Image 1 (tube, protein in one colour):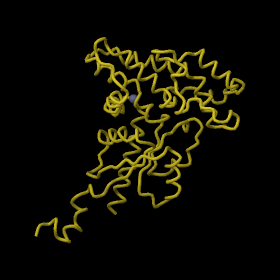
Image 2: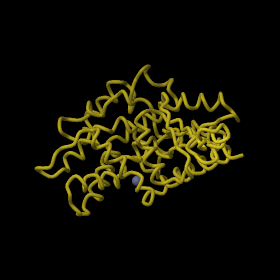
Image 3: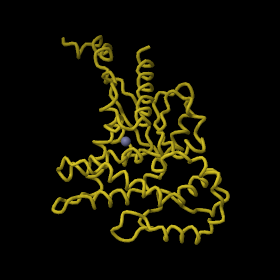
Image 4: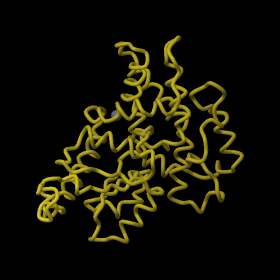
Length: 290
Ligand SMILES: [Zn+2]
């Protein structure tokens, strides 16, 4: 009789095969799975345990699960910070050792980091030129500058939704930056943004308090990732050399997922999120082994 077929052997399996114990990680949506999979496989030693990322319907659903489970929580939760660094709306859940928060608004704000964008463009253009980092950094600064007013309104709305018109989407994921952008342009048009603000009568709302909270922060970290996707991908495609193939969104995402984990050495806020995730993974392993 072989070990696998004896009842004793079956009982022993977890001792030999750690992958029988899977660490479950709740993430906000399907698009978060390849991102966190890439981060975990590149940056975190799971000590032989396998990882299963389970998509949920956004941060509200994950937070609901955290509250329901209490001390019996047997999963790790990864939650987008959104404006938490500014208005501290999720501060309460940060005490949970198995809850990991992005510091930037969402995974896209890491994925679209100028370091990842530059590496992606370099790869597509098959060049070792180093001009792309500065180019991507300048693009992100200009994009943030143009979206600054909308960002302040969007954050203010998160804090005080009651003073905004019902159903108004500012930097929302169901809104689209393309409506502020003229064809083939990757930067939004400031006149179109000003018109939007006036037409929705939100120009009367004072955002000085919010602007002060942002003072020394990098605005790019807080721009809603879904909202800026169109600009990011149009920008990448305009940097692709003549004669090279323009890439669709899915292929570009694949490249960004590949490069993004390398950013941890250049972006300290990213490495601290990864450290926090590593602590949560180690804590879960300890739970399994005691
Ligand atoms: Zn980065």
